[in-house]
Length: 270
Ligand code: C2E
Ligand code: MG
Ligand code: MG
Ligand code: MG
Image 1 (spheres, rainbow, N blue to C red):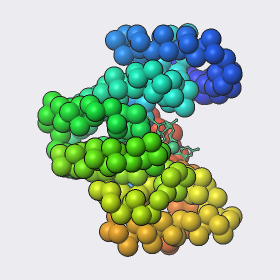
Image 2 (image 1 turned 180 degrees about the horizontal axis):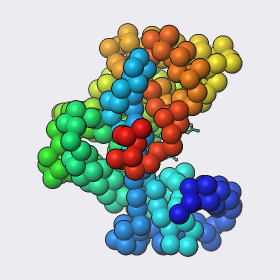
Image 3 (image 1 turned 120 degrees about the vertical axis):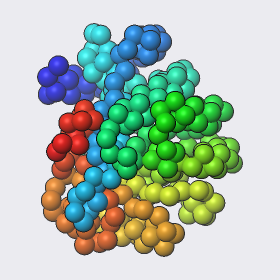
């Protein structure tokens, strides 16, 4: 599968999907078979220190190799998976597969970040799913980072908070993903067992040009560091941006500057 072709198709399909109910239904049906038929895949992106660009961990990103439509990204199918409840099964597969992949690596230090959607968080099954996947893989809980977005707290903040505390009790690390784009109640942040803030890539992308984005990034850095959290910038594409982040005191970053997400072994060789 040529990468360029896959990406072009993906965008085309995404545009169609927005208003095509029939295609959405077809996807929902096809998704029922996706896990069993081995159509799901994971690509990985490295997370590195801003200082010496040393790899500290990897993030697993879900792809669906649809037999007719080619490789689909999460933006195409995640909302359908959430609405149909299929996300619980998908999320379970992601946890088990990514932890199995990590267990194969020789480096016993690298962290693994897995994205958790709002629906998964309040499904009532996440904590057990995580505990089982950890036990099966033999990976130390401290190496697993669960990334949740602020939207997870908009429906039932109390329930979401409860689950985060349960997860935290397993020993895993909690990261707030896309920070700054969502619900962002600072009062609520104080009651959450969060370890990492990931600055949304929309702010990071505008960093060199705009002062507004710069102000947001330095505020998140001040807030995060003030609370003793690790701050990670996402979506770093250029050396200029990385240099700015380094000078602002940002801890770690992820982004296409290190290449596009890919096979776990390949991205660690870069
Ligand atoms: P995210 O967790 O914030 O992941 C970062 C997204 O930004 C990824 O898109 C990644 O490919 C992209 N990205 C990373 N660096 C750069 C960059 O330098 N420039 C640009 N333009 N983009 C960059 P992807 O893989 O399409 O994932 C989109 C979102 O889907 C993720 O956002 C995450 O919220 C969700 N997602 C991905 N995998 C899973 C999964 O296994 N489970 C769940 N529940 N959600 C997932
Ligand atoms: Mg993420
Ligand atoms: Mg993000
Ligand atoms: Mg995102």
